Length: 105
Image (cartoon, rainbow, N blue to C red; front, side, top):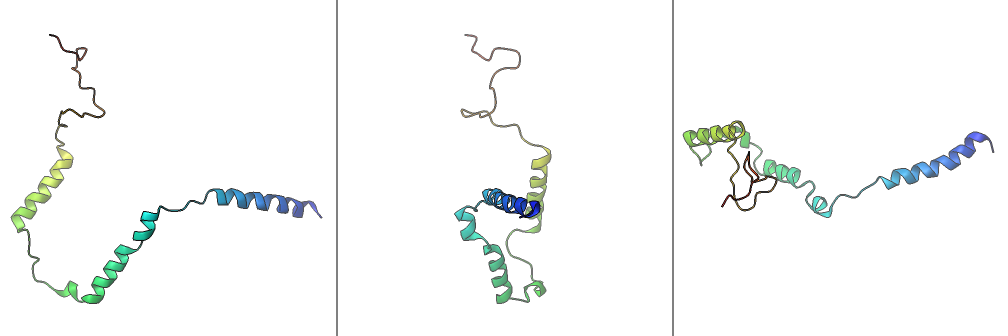
């Protein structure tokens, strides 16, 4: 046996073992739902392939209310409200800025 084939017979199984160690299986929950969105879109297009040609307005929220909802949504990312201070403040100290945070009674 020459040196190259000896190295190949030793390195190949080691490389295959290393590669199989990196393989993970997706969670079962993802497996059961995988492809549902595509299947649903295909089914809806099969039922009504000319839906994009329908120009009748969609019933539901009127234009002013929809515009206000979009404005409020955009503003919620610009002007974030201060977090509410309650009994379960996770990640906040709850103390005063200059004091020890305890009661001064």
